[in-house]
Amino acid sequence: MKRIIKTLCISIAILFFSNSSSFGQTITVSEDSVKTLLCHKWGIERITLLGQDMSTEGHTMTYEFFKDNTYQWVFHNKTEMGTWTYDPENKYIHLKAKKDNLIYIIALKDGEFEKSVNGDKHPIFDPSIEMIEFYKVLNP
Image (cartoon, rainbow, N blue to C red; front, top):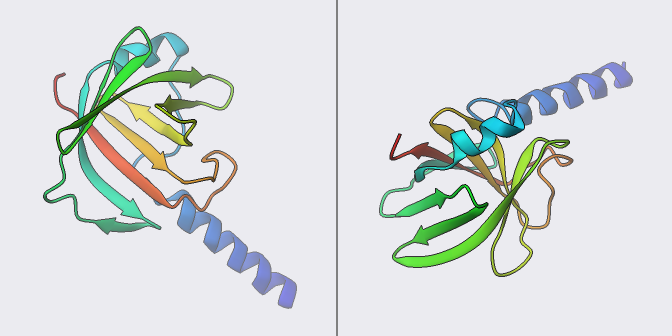
């Protein structure tokens, strides 16, 4: 009986964490399509922390991605440049700026992406992603 309850609890936890994003944590488009979908200017739409919605009111955060695999990030008038790389095997986009940070785009589709801000945890191997930022394209 304890085994059944334990299995049920684990299954519920997996379902809870796997449903915390709006459209799934994977990039399913072809490698060629990633640049086409990504290379736009994006604005933050919402943030979740451990599955709970947080307010973005008063926060200005934009990304602009370029076809040469660079990006510009603007947060409250502070601009930072970085590079991005697509990992087709693990199906995520790694964003790298001044330091080697663990920031990944974990889901991408036409007009939307999800970014994991996960400290030292890897988004593909750890289901308890701490914070997800949701972005919408600003210049389709």
